[in-house]
Length: 600
Image 1 (tube, helix red, strand yellow):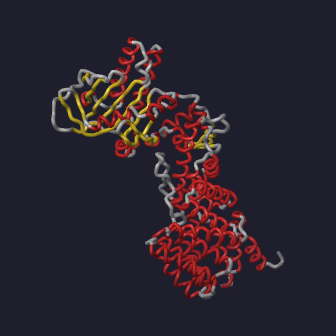
Image 2 (cartoon, helix red, strand yellow):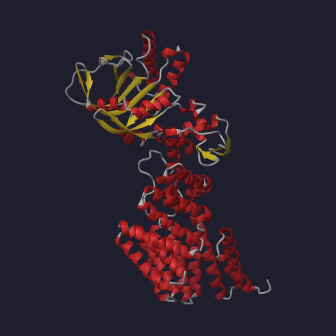
Image 3 (cartoon, helix red, strand yellow):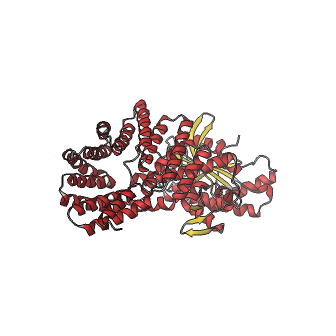
């Protein structure tokens, strides 16, 4: 046991008087790795190097010595920092400064006196007495410093420093400050003596490892990697990731985006599992953020994994989200496959659902269905009924988009059974919505009305206005299929104000539905107005299937009004969209165009 004797990092660092009152302090504890096996001389050199490094790093990071109190621990030190110093400096600037100073020390020190350090940061109430300082928060910090995951992290990394922050410090300080590079921390479980808690580990100085980085980059699913994805994979900040990628001499195919290509075999064992999980969870979280912005009504489960410390990208506009999906589309497809192949089954079933926006708007049906089938298998491997239900419903929507309606109906029916068994009314409402639409496409309009009315009841009972509005829209189309355009118009009129307050895509389809109902009631001028309004919305949000449908029906309304040229123009533009999407609607548009010019 080391004597807790107060020492000074600098003459300006003053001890604290005896007090019975607790005061709040930031707490930093450090420990030199493999200290006990050194000779006495090497221990002295290492201790001197540690204190010199601490002095310089504190100054570099803006932590004044007069705000610090230090106790020597033989192979380490405990430093308390006063409340006048922003806590973010201990987790932001200080670790990088300390790693830099230690690296310089090691460059000129004999092998036995070189230093690698574990460090722990926390904050809480402490009490000074005549022997030093005590408090539960100090005990917690030393338990973090002694945690096996921190020792393993330092042992396995090529750098000189492994830092662990308490869960409180991470949530209240690190996550709230961009200077702390929260994405470079990873969560671990800590179990030391009586302490059971969580900690967050960061390894400053990753860019110093010329061999490890290419091995980790080789794990990336896809041939190009962005700086934020690399930061998640390497468990470093975006700034460190940018420096790493630039330093490797990789081809920068776009700003902040590098071509990784074949970099050899990746690491094995736990390092492989942890690195892959970080980057896959990052893709999942970012894809779900894009989905929430672009297509919020489509999926109801929370898809981001709550136990993953990665910080996915968020988007300010729909355009930003759409651009990210398009740029990352090949990586996203590869990530879904790799998640299943590598046994990350909880990510494998979620990722195809988070990718809904990309699959739905871009319409690569084969990739979508393959990813969803893989996700369904992964959910079944886990025995996750919730995942099974959503994967089945996802396959129902994907098959529906390919116009494979009999298959789609089977998937939706199975999904409804799962959700009913789980007592998940929102999931059941979502699946019933798809089943009703499929029945309408199969000309089973009475069945469609039954399913959609139940979907509406479930969504309304759950207080889910968005999906209640969607059910009303679909119910309107089902009534139109029965040629009951008055009932259809009422549904669309009820749905439209809900859609305006929820999301733009629903608004587009409610406007299209109003046009469709007026079309059926032979009010063609009013139909044209609504179709044009719907077309504007679909173009704005990038919904190409909706744009094609609106153009097709607008052409029909124009033709009823005797405007053949306008109809031809609409159908030509619809044809280009349907051909690009490879949907069966192409033949119907071609037939309409030929009807305008039988000689063609």
